[in-house]
Amino acid sequence: MVERYPERVTSFVAGRAWADRGSELPIVDPSTGERIGTLVEAGAEDVDAAVRAARSAFENSGWARMDTGKRQETLLAAHDAILAHADELAELECAALGVPLRELRERHMRRAAYNFRFFAEFIGQMRGEVYDQTEGYRSIVVREPVGVAALIAPWNAPVALASMKVAAALAFGNTCVLKPSEQTPLALRRFVEILHEAGVPDGVVNLVNGRGPVTGAALVAHPGVDLISFTGGTETGRAIMEAAGRRLVPCTMELGGKSANIVFASADRERALDAALASIYSNNGQQCLAGSRILVEREIAERFIADFVDRARRIRIGDPRDETTELGPLASAGHRERVLGFARDAAADGLTLLTGGDAPRGLPDRLSGGFYVEPIAALAADNAVRACQQEIFGPFATFQIFDGYDDAIRRANDTEFGLVSYVWSDHLPTVERAVRDLRSGVVWVNTTMTRELRAPFGGYANSGVGREGGEACMQFYTEQKTVTIPSRPIAVRRFGAG
Ligand code: NDP
Image 1 (cartoon, protein in one colour):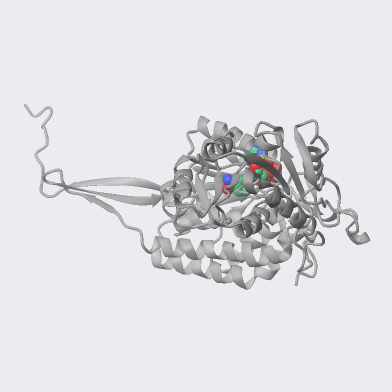
Image 2: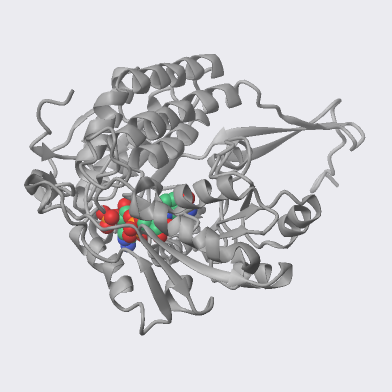
């Protein structure tokens, strides 16, 4: 149990707390709206110190050239340490994010720990390449760490998402500077300390706290950064990739989504209903892979939508620390305003509001300053409406009714995004066609979100560039070096020898 949250949260550089020289920003608990701490922002000089520490650790700490077995031991120690501190990390995350504590403890922190175990095991199985087809020569391809990685994480699942980046960067021998969102600094700051307690050498993982346009922009522009891995909004991703392009720094971009959840009449309707609710309302509705556009086939639509609305109205909203809460507050006051704005403008935007769209009534007084919303569901006139095209990133489900397979796929693919799609049908030919025709980086068939870390994860179109996952991270976080050696002394052309 966390007795008190840290009053001042700073960066973490070269293995210790860093005295940042930037502005002071409030850290707010979204469940009450109260200020619970102060974040001291890292300015350009602080970011410079963090990148230098990462560079020095890359060159001098031995991490980059460490034996695989020894590096695996450290990654596995990190796995154990995260699990041992799962309750503490979940409480810190909950305090600044507002996602139900149970979800954070049982899903986010387990996933964070598993990321380290996964990459520890992955590097134990890496293989090289050998070419001996050129007569008299043998060429081998080795992989080496790239250098200093800038890792930029969003606020909706800070530890779960950032841990994937840190574990991957470290596993392949890189050092890194992590920048969390300034809204949710608490758990990641402690997470980095825990990694050090588990034996990660000083300077291998550094963290800079502060706002995107200040701290994040300084990190992205720093000439000492060799790689950028970003998860966040599409517009931010575009700006970062432009900055990186000027220095030819490789990037991966995990960006936004507006994913279709297609429920055919041939689906197992009970399961599809449970999944439709979970896909849009878990994590307080704030997830890139939310099934936010629910497309239902006409013959089952009326009943399906009515059942969905009935269940949405019964979702338990409240204090995220309460074990029975299903939907906590949104992450900030500004974000709540934006989400409710879509509900307020519903009629003008071509939506019929079916439920929600307001602050919930009947919450205890102590939560009256929190950023709560009722779960929202709306029927869209067609796929062109604003709520079906823009990412809302909140507990806001839109329904469309479709007529037949072609109509479903046309609506699903009519989007600037392409992160994931969900298909519900027990008719195999329909499933096979849909898997082929859907334009997204992931297609989940008859299931809610299930990440297979061995497989690539990432989006088509404006949902991203590059992929994360075992093999994909190996490609991104390593340089390939080809070494060619003749099998006997070779005859070299003798310039100037007469
Ligand atoms: P943002 O794009 O606003 O921010 C993401 C991160 O980038 C934050 O740490 C932010 O800092 C930082 N940042 C902002 N501006 C800059 C800049 N100019 N230079 C460097 N860094 C910057 O996204 P959100 O945090 O609002 O996260 C929500 C978005 O993330 C949604 O669009 C969601 O779909 C997407 N996302 C994608 C996922 C995927 O795997 N595809 C997974 C999860 C979320 P700060 O917040 O401190 O300003």
